Amino acid sequence: MKNGEKMNRRSELFEYIGKDENLLPVIENVVYLEGVLTDLREKPKIKINPKDPTQQKLLPAAKLYKEYMQQYLNAIKILLRAAGKDGADEDSPLREYFRSLSESENAC
Image 1 (cartoon, rainbow, N blue to C red):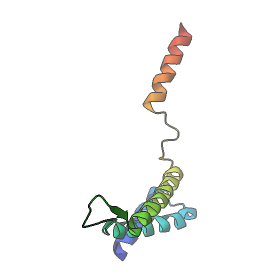
Image 2: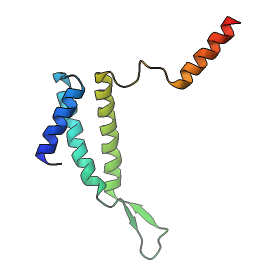
Image 3: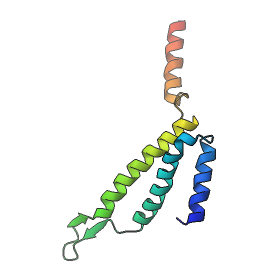
Image 4: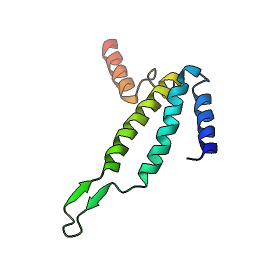
């Protein structure tokens, strides 16, 4: 990620969370992780034995990608929760359905 793109992404995330300066370290972490994940995405993740293709070995890039992706997703969840857009207040369609069932049973 280029510096201009990083600045735009920082600004975009900062606006999204309502300009809460307490979350700037989380935004910095998200922007950093996006850059690292982009780089890791291009690296090979599995080494295949040329003599026996059924033998495969996971390369360090695959493990790093998995670890960084988990950190990235956790940071995104924090930002979504802070912005109030994580859907925690909303009921899923399944919950609404079961609530309507229980209300209709109570009405009988």
